[in-house]
Length: 424
Image (cartoon, rainbow, N blue to C red; front, side, top):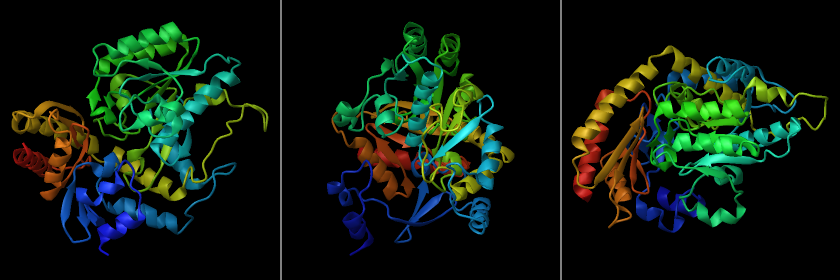
């Protein structure tokens, strides 16, 4: 059997109809160099989706490779349940210095959905520990996406076939989607109306990524932050997708003027090297869990691989590189270039409905009314030309590594234009 046949015979891919897997010409990666992936046949593909938004500095970054090798000579993993690990402490300290969270304390997990799930449980127990048992509901936004565990799925809006799990989801107070005018102001009003039963508000600052890069004005978030502050409702910022420079600042919350009580991080936290996520709690939240040993105030939650030492070593070096190199400058410069190029070369296509971009989180929404697979066919045409993209419904996503060059931006846009010309 060839690699594709072996893959289909043994692997179950997420968000993928396996009965059609081979027919969609998947790329089978063997290795990578810089911002390119190389398949088992030696063909190269510019990774224009950052391997699902996780790769920040590119593949095989020498400093990150070295950090991983050095940690292997010490210890690969030790439990964080009741014990500590030196490199995890060092990373948590470094993270606390840069996150927009007051006196941060970090609980680690392995993926973004788990980070959100942790935040939900922490918010719920926070009020229980404070003696307020009526605050058991959450406010979330239409079109939001927070992961595919049951709690995070409940927060999400709809789409991606999640309606099949509706019987498992718990109800939330639903604010409008970012695409609706005044969504944040409506959410602030809902917070004031329902604050006595709200444990927390959960929001993706600035960009609803899985909604096709739906963007809300940064200034509008002040109203939501003020409503939470004045009513005491906890604010959870889900920066799994937007964190670590993706929108042009280290965290999107900075642009929105938000200081969340709980901050969820993932994806780019290790530069795309290893699975790791984090739920960062403010001192206000953390203090509510302090009490006698084995008391009910304890957070009885943790994962076997939470705070993995290898991941922490890479994450620490990655954060050091992010804050010492002109990565964020490049994001802003390449974002401006990408916006101009998309408006010039892509917007004129008849099938293009809208272009949305925040930092290096880009979406080209296409008219798929007569062809539901049009965006997918466009991405396939891009892959054929050596640029790896991915569609979400009618949207072609462009989420390149943060170190993408000007030449590579031009390559992405010209490839998309050629693909649209072929598939129109």
